Amino acid sequence: MKRLTLLCLLLLTLLAACNRENLGVQQGAEGGLDLTLSLSEADVNTALTAALAQLPNPLLRSPQADLQSGQILVTGQHERRDGQGTVSGTVTLTVTVQDGALLVQATQISIEGFDAGDARLAEFNRLLQDVFNSRLSRDRGLLTFKSVTITDAAVEVVANVQRP
Image 1 (tube, helix red, strand yellow):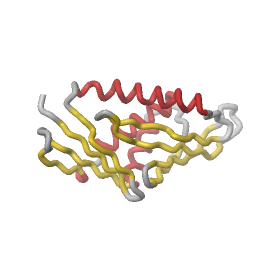
Image 2 (cartoon, rainbow, N blue to C red):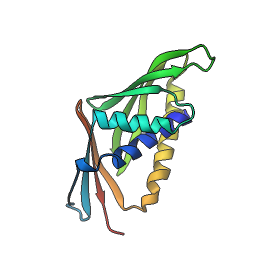
Image 3 (cartoon, rainbow, N blue to C red):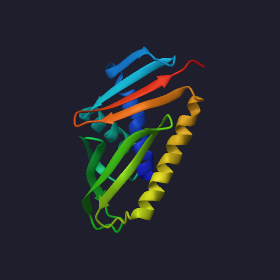
Image 4 (tube, rainbow, N blue to C red):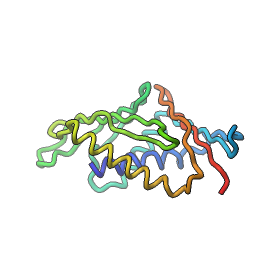
């Protein structure tokens, strides 16, 4: 579970870093600057592959992200922990904004031999949120996420940045 948490955190970090040409900037209504980042499915796949390369034993290998309305479906190969080969698996992620922060949640993990019941999924999401909150607290309150929209074609993130 911790590996998937790290994967999701790395994914969003890499998404922001790898796609500067799809970044829009305008004066924010509340002051500061509103930044709009648009990421294609290819961008998400590139970032996901790079993020997984950083992990020694990721939950899914050879990942492919499929953008769907409101969610990201990640498919890949899972190495069975009993050493009996690999099985296909999927993880469904949602990305929303709650109180100015990004909220990334796995809504479903479907991997043969991997128990992802309600309690385990709730614990994973709690860990995921803890990681994001600790990472985003470094901005000292200068970055406020306004919206995230996931369509079949792109992930669009809008955030406001204030001067220190």
